[in-house]
Every structure is written in structure tokens, then in C-alpha cells.
Length: 125
Image 1 (cartoon, one colour):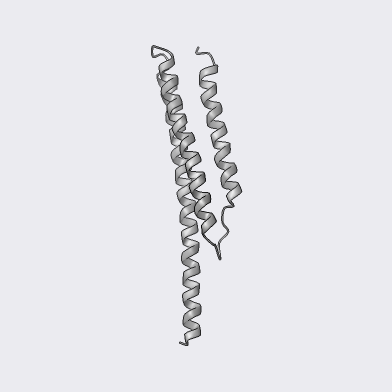
Image 2 (cartoon, rainbow, N blue to C red):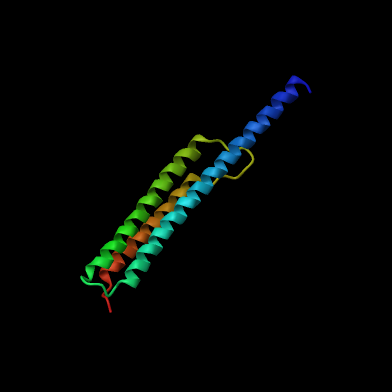
């Protein structure tokens, strides 16, 4: 094997390793989004399960705490993913665009904030 062939092979391996790293970071972002969605589910489930608890504001406050944790997770995941993807270069794979990451994260933040507001606005029956 010639020196040029070895160099080409090394470059190819490096490019594939960079692509794997990009995809790993996208999976990490997806994992954090799932964690945020789990926090939303726990908050809403807690509120539904304990809505008869006295004082009536306590289940709402606890559920709101979980919703705030979810918002923090969404924002943190978005910032980290965009930062890492901005530093890496993909070669053979299609990368999730930073703007799509931002749109997804902020849509989740908006929806979670709306849920938190709805918890407090909607009258208990």
C-alpha cells in the first residue's frame, strides 16, 4: 500500500469518525428532549393525581416546578447541541440544521410555558 493510499484511508477514517460524533451529539439532543418531555409528563400527572390536595395551589406549584425543569432542559439541550454541531464538520451524513434544533426547542418551551399557564388559569372542577 502506497503512502498516498494510507493517507487517503486515514482521512476517510477521520471523516467517518467525525460523522459518528455528529450523529452521537444528535442522539444526545434527542435524549435530552425526551428527558424534558418526561418532566412535562410527571408534572401533569402529579397535578392530575393530586388535584384534590389541600391547599389547592400545592399540586399546581409542584407541577409548575416540573414544567420549569423541562423548560430548563429544553433550553440547555438546544444551546449545547447548537454549540457542538457548530464546531463539528459532517462529511457523509445529513446533519440536523441548527435552526431546526432551535425551532424544536423553542416550540417545546412555548408549549410547556402554555401548559404551566393553563394549570393556573383553568378553574379546578
